[in-house]
Length: 609
Ligand code: C2O
Image (cartoon, rainbow, N blue to C red; front, side):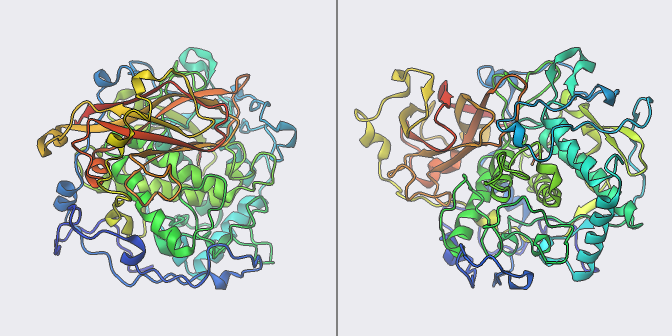
């Protein structure tokens, strides 16, 4: 590991042609990347050995990317201003979310999980109470040994042996030890399934929830931080770093081999996983609960533009990437718009479902929030989610900034550190991974050049639908999504100039989504699509994105409300619809949508800040 470099994007400037001009030949993905797959996506042979992972050959090196070209070529970014979103995301002038000083206030997670009787991991998620002292504010060590997290698919056998040793040591601890595998797994359940309330900030009736909002990235970053330091302590190696599951790169798009059953009690193996999703099956970044049967090469050709969409098109500002505000007094059950960021709702949720075992009552382990932390792969999946946060900031664009609101900076959580001290940590201290003493091994990000392409460019789809498809102003809301829904939605402006686009982002909002929080829910959204998403995949520009939710239990109520926004500035350029007054929006339910309703579909221009 001597030759590791730290930067995510190269900064030198040997660029031959603009990376993101409309005329450059980004795609077709499958031709462009010439990935060689030596096995079909769905291999029926369940006895695949670690050594038989597919050989994915990337014959090109990513060209060096000039940051300025990235900046100029990607279109415009922007930050939601509260004033512009009064009907979409409530602005918050509150008290930051604060986990309780007194962890003995933790209660057993709500028991009305859809199949709580079969909750094999149990709902008693509270941490052990070692003392009655208040947690101390955590201070990041100065000059820490830098821990370099390796890409799982490239980890050496020595590294894997060490990692296995650390996890085994964690599993060998008594269950009530704060560092035990069980207690580490419980942390996720406690922070997601109602273990803690907002009592310390005056709202004992409200649960504390770290998903579906801007708390998602920082909470999980701190969670992994202590988990990693605990593992390092257990093997006496402060430089130990957990690996990352590099699902955004074709060489890492299968379940990392080190997590498979090796017949020798591999501590990284978890029996509660989908046994049909072993290598060489390629992870489907758009997974909606069913295998699509796409070939390996086609799946990679979908995954890369899907990553582009989640990191660029639909992540052009802080709110789109981080998710909506969440402050003390907000009810995670009833808040009008719990908005998950593009990565949380996208590849993050998809991987949880793809890994969890669909035969288990609650999709254990990864497929449900209450149980996800018991699978060692959870932390490795989240390491790549965390890496996406770092990369997103490294892509030097105007809108790519951490939240600056005090309510975000001062939100805090409580963890046991590697010395078993109870500590309080703040979002403001986790914005820079180098200061936290870790970084990621460099791995190419081919998706940055995988801007989707139009499926049926210039088909005048919206114009042809007038008189056939209902206009959004004639629709009676709430609208049920138990079947495909199509509406014509008027745009606030047409033929926007380059300057217009630099000032404002055009976003398509689907708001007031009400659904059963106990189910895996997913629907896809298309713009000017000709075939209702039958042929049109995430590799096509017409695919605006999806809304997806992992099941989690919610006290006495099952209904959750949320919203989602999709950046359509680049999309309309790609499909040559910039002059159209209206667009045809198609909502295609994929899973869990029978009872789902929507209360608003609208397009707004949101200022770039
Ligand atoms: Cu806390 Cu992947 O979820």
